[in-house]
Length: 225
Image (cartoon, rainbow, N blue to C red; front, side, top):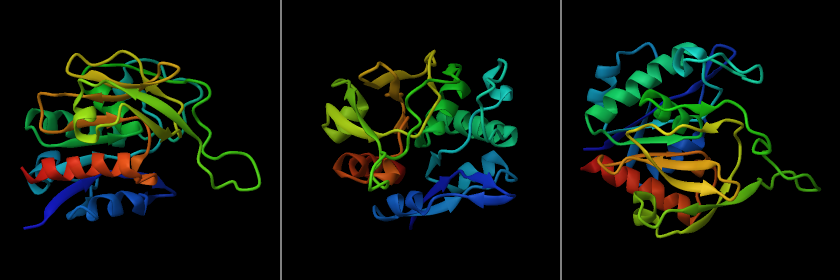
């Protein structure tokens, strides 16, 4: 029986928007991707899926931040935030594997009682400037050797891409920081009390190097248990 991974999505001009890279990342390890609609019941979704990916996208809204929205916020969609926060909390309670990517790490943190920094400078550039504008900006992170992330990757230092202007600030009491950038931005959080509950600030599905593949493989393996 196939492993089903539910993946959340963004919107653009009233259309569902989700990069194919998410689907390819889980399919190469034997899982089937199911794009999750926000019109569905959260419990029904979790009954159908073996794991959940909270995908990237726009900024979080006031309804989950419990504070005034920063003027620099963009692509805010409150219905998505409310749905994903409930999805995250219920998956956490049921020990269903959750992998949060970019805005996904932020949803995981606020859904479980943490806070985010609504704007940081210097992390939003997607591509380098030059003759070849397809070279993504990357920076290094330091991974805690006692963390689950280190356990499944065996990487203490790694290079990651940088597509965000928000980040985790006040960590949820349910989570721990497992990776930071050299300028001390939180790059990954986890909960060791769950089979797989990991949020990363970068987009591993866009990289799929050895480091990224190990994370997706560990996620799909956790979905099989």
